[in-house]
Structures are given as C-alpha cells and as structure tokens.
Image (cartoon, rainbow, N blue to C red; front, side, top):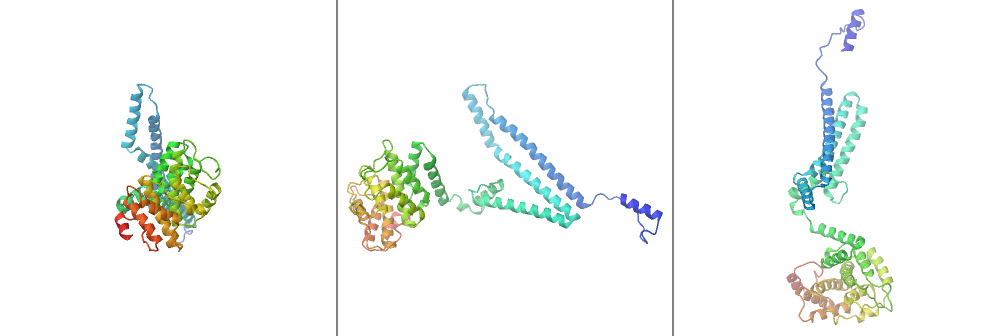
Length: 411
C-alpha cells in the first residue's frame, strides 16, 4: 500500500514519469493466499510443538507419581498400591501415550519444513530447492527407518510406525507367517549361547544345557553354539589330561554330562551339514590340543557320548576299538544319538563315497537293536538305516525330519 501511494504522489507531481500508465489507489483485499497457507501451517507446527511439550511435562509428573514410595501403611498395602498403579498403566495404555509425543514433534518438524519450502518457492526457486532437498532427504530417511524397523524386528531403529506396520503385516497381510518356528528357534539358540557365555549361576547353566539336549538337531544351525558347549564341557573337567584319562570336577558331573550331550548333538549335525566350515576347522584344532588322540573317557558316566565325539575328531586306532557294549541310556538320549549317527553314516558313505560306514557307527546300530526292552520305533528305524547304508543301499531322507511311519517305509 505504501508503494502504491508513492506512485500516485509521483504521478501528481510529474505525470510524465509513468507515461500513459496512470497509477490508481489499490483496494485492500487481504494477504495473498500463499501467505495465509504458510502462516496456517507454521502456526499448526507451533501448536503441535507446544502441545507435545505440555504432554511431556504431564508425563514426567505421571512417572514421578508412579515411582513415588508410600511410607504409610503396611508392606502389603504398599505392594497392593504399587500393583494398582502398574495395572492402571497397562489398562490405560500409558506406553502408547508416551510414544505419541515423538510422533507429534516429528509431525511439527514436517509441517515446518513444508511451510518453509512452500513460502520460499514463491520468492526464489533456488533458495527453495535447497530447503526442499534437505526436507525430502530427511523424510526419505525416516521412511527407510520405519520400513527397516518393521521388516527386521532386531533392528535398533524402532519407531511407533514400525510397530504399527509390523502388527498390520502379521495380523492382516500375512497372518500365517506370524511367529515363524525357524525365527523362534534361531532366537532361542542365540539366547542359549548368551547364557552359556555370561551366566555364572550353575543352576541356570544346567537348565540351559538340558533344554539344548532336547532340541532337534536339524534346527540347530548356529555354529557359535558348538564352541560354547565345548567351552562349557572343558570348564567342567579337571585341568589337563593325565595319562590320557579325563575326569570331571567334583560337583559338576551333571554339567559335564549335559554339555557333552549338547556338544555331540551339535557337532555331529554341523559335520553332516557343512564339514568344511571355518568354525569346524578351528574347533578341530582346539579339540585336538585339549584331547589328544590317545585320550580315554572311561572314567566318565557319559563316556560313550564323548568317545563318539572323539571319533569325529580323531582317526586313531581307538576309533576302531570303540564299542557300545554297556551303553543303555535314557530313551531321549538314545534317540538323539541314533538320529545323529544315521546322519553321519549317510555323510561318510553316500556323500564322501567312502568304501563303508565306520565300524563304531555300525556297532551302535547292532547294539541298540539288541537292547532289552527294545528301543523306540524311531531308534529302530535309524539303526536299520545305518545298516542299510553300510550294505551299500541308497537311503533317501535319512536326515530329513519325517514321521516315524514315513521313515520306516523309506527304510
């Protein structure tokens, strides 16, 4: 308006300044539409920021009230009051309210970037391009983080948007794929490995090792777990091998037994699946260094299992003389050993094209079949598969998880 009045004043003084163009006094019609839109977005961003700050202060007050300790009343009353607070937090979705605060701030930043870009575009395209490029990069990065957090649950960049997308994908888009057994098993194995490495509680370690021995061998694919089991077993025996004899530390006999079973269960499966892996070679060097070829396990309760594992690492004469004459373990251990040995028999004969299956594996099959009372049907099927492989038959599906009836028919 000021510039328009100056033009009118100059024209009154010298009407030749603007030529035939006669300036007129413009009528005020309000600010331009672009200014109104930009101002609305900027004030919305400001309001969202203030609202998030208001909720943040309220949230701090709520948390202080929850953490406050009541000094009045009995211990039972104080415990009930604390439980009442916890139930209220769960029932009223307190965590969702707190997670909404970062979302409000992020929305406020997005509105601010959009308003600046829109306003600067009307003034100068070059300057606006810089702001638009920076804002677009931030938006793309945020979308990438949301996608990564929703696809990979172990991703550390988790956001509320990632949780919403993961929930929708599991419940709406792919309901059958939720809770995959393979992912659950892999997570269990990493938890077991972490416990064996860090826990100093003997009862916790023993329970973990017992759980490991109950797991199906084909589900065990973590190569680091076999190293953890070997370290657990070495920690349960007396230092050094005297005169070729191995003895367990007093009070750790159960730990030594469970770690030996877990070690044999994993190493036999990994040897069948990937015999040339780097972990196998490193473990072989460590094993031979701790237990030379002339090592005996006759003083241990689990001597048969460790002797079988010893046969996997050594090719000495003791491997030929190894027998199972007095081996009569519990049914779960016998099933685990038979399943691993049939895989090893198939590997050493059918995969490596050797002349025959090692005799110590054949002796196990003949010994297990002759047990009184007879073993479970699955053990009989494994033993028959070992004998069939030793006779030169091609036994398919020996290491593939199948029902007992299907494997019996194949055998």
